[in-house]
Each structure stands twice: as structure tokens, then as C-alpha cells.
Length: 258
Image (cartoon, rainbow, N blue to C red; front, side):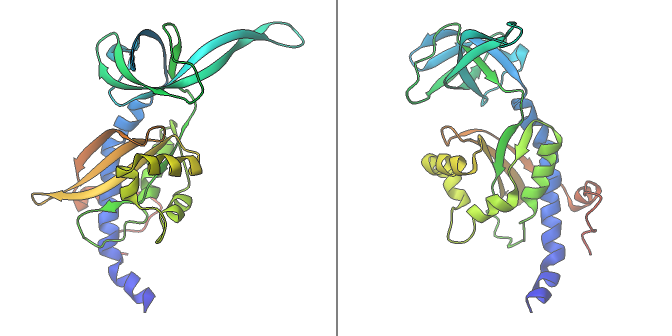
């Protein structure tokens, strides 16, 4: 009987899942662009406001989260004696709130037990892949479609960008299994979002939401900071029509009608 229900519901469910996946392809570049590697300096401090020498001309965007670090003493190769680099101390994070052509203003997020940043401390978005988790889809349309494979579709797109390392959606799905965490908690409860992020050892959440406004169905995708548990930025796009979703299907998947 269960198999019969899956077969009966499969085509409609697959169609909506494909449309969500194809729609995310249209907005994925915004997420990739927001996390391009960048490095700069703190050039001003006013309370919890930091001013960085990273402006729009260098790729700064509202919603970016940069690590603040202080460069220490130089260290050397034990055999050759040649300098290899400098020790670094992480001081906290800077979340960009306003961007100008040549500088940006950010909110200082402290790291417990570390000194406050000062002028000439460094800021960066790492050149390494950023480890993230994608929550299950929050469907606010009451469509009752099976969207369980959407996180896998989104993960493929983000992994291919070579900027993100996506936690296995199966492992994330277990966290949000019945009786566990809820996607709404990640969106609305910062402390809950940060605790779950620490458990998965990720630096950010991608939360896909399907919603309907005035007869139009949208995909709303939000980036949640694993540091503060707050939303840093989001993108919203009307779902592509079924025909467009078919054209963007992944080659190893069966057609929607199968």
C-alpha cells in the first residue's frame, strides 16, 4: 500500500521538487558571489561598529560575514630558518551592514575571551571551502508535495561552485526528523540555530522556503549565520514553470512522468 501511494504521488511531487531546484540555480550565483575570498583591514572602530577597507569595488556586500584576526609574530622553518608566515589570533567576526565604494561598515560580533579589534587588525573570508548545512524545505503552500530531495539538488549546485562544502543532507535530515528540530526554529530562534550549527560543525545555514503570494509560488532562500543565528541575507524568486524545470533536470534523473 505504501509503495502504491508513492507511485501515485510521485509525478506531482517530483514536478514541484524540480521547479524548486531549477529556481535555485537562478539565485545560486548570488550566494557564491557573497562568499568570494577577500582580505582587508579594520580602519576604524566606533563602539560595536567597525569600518573596513573592503568596499563595493573589492566585492563587499551587505550580509557578508568576515573573520577578524590579529597577526602575531613570524614563525620559521625549523631546518632552513626561512620565514613561513605569522601566527594569527581570531578575535571575532564582522557582519557587513552598509557598503560604500571604498569601505564598508560592519557590526562587531565578539568571540568570548578575546580582545576587541583595533585599527590594522585583519578581516577575511577564507579561500577554503565554507562548510554549510541545508535544512529541509519549509513548505508554506500546504501543497503536501514530497520535497525531500530538494536539499540534494541545492547541495549539488553549491558544491559545484567550489566555494562550499555541504554537509550530507541525509545527516541534516536526521536532525530535523519528527520529534527533533524544526526548520522554523532555525529561522526564528538564534540560540537554537547556533546550537544546531555547532553540533553539525558548520558556519552557516541555507534555509529554502516555498511560499505563495497573490497566486504566485516563490522560492525564498535565506542564509543564517552560525555565529549569531540571525539571517544575513535572502533571495526570492518565482518558481520557474514546469517546462523550464524539465530543461534543467540533472541527466541522471528520470523524467517527471516516470
